[in-house]
Length: 434
Image: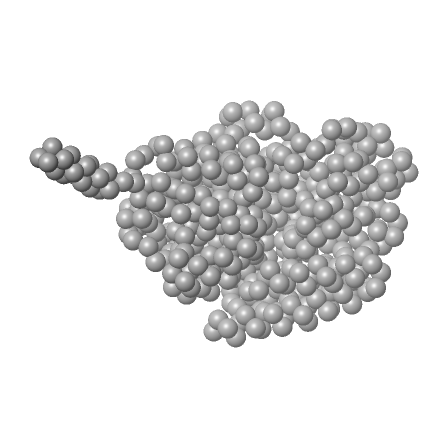
């Protein structure tokens, strides 16, 4: 009996000791599936192995929309994760969620964690900062659109990678004359052909500096250069220069198969292009601009997502979140993520490390996106887009653009309708957040 009692006491002491020393769990909801999800798990495992106080648990919650709406619902039920990955078009929604968000700059300060915003690319952090320049969320997977081109078809037609949209037209005509079936296609048409067209030409797509200066906004995409560009794309479609392939990355097979000689999509598509293109060499160039419309093209804007911290947890847990963000920002971690995925390195140090490791020399074109984003200082029109209900607004723009490709509306008619519909969504958001 005495032995049993001693055993029980020992077990209780052991359990108490284990509980006292158990690592604090940090839950991270994300939208990275497949290989990207595996890489996310690897990053968390590396952090967990680097120290004994915290365990980061990544949880895949579906696509970007599902992940964000799930986190909002969880917060209302007081079951929110510590960290949630939110895509860039959800920024205004997150900022308007009063009392739900723990701003990153404040988190790092409260946790006494070393943090210098100048370490990060300004073209990335500007999108996710408040009016005083303070970072609200932690950049994680940022990308920007570039142009992929079929080197074999270009060589056969005797054309060079285009710098301008005028070059795209000229090159496409030569490519078609030389047997190509299509000049170019595009992924994410609203992001690439509207949002980034505006940024490249220093033309806001909405009032109040694309929403950065206020929430009472109106869309501006039924003016130049947007209408001229979309109408030109409609003309090109009739001529076989442009082929529409879908709203997201559905058009990729048109490029992979060699049917279209050029493909505009995210820099983060690089790994997929490299894996899928089997029968020809491809190159990467900057997103074109209209030479007739702008003398000096501006930077493109980013896509992808950042990591937002949600309120409602203990201070000790937030210390773990801050430590994880410091770990995530290390040059070796960011360089590895950048090189594996094609997303931008979010820090200057990660870019320099990738260069030193010979990554850009061994993978030509992978530095194009970085140069495109950093060669010029962002303007209010090229800093980014911060509009409420922007997920729905993108759907509206996509629907109206499809009426142009189908020949049912002119560019002016479609973009007039897109502006009217989008303004209704903007007004609804403003009323709900005043």
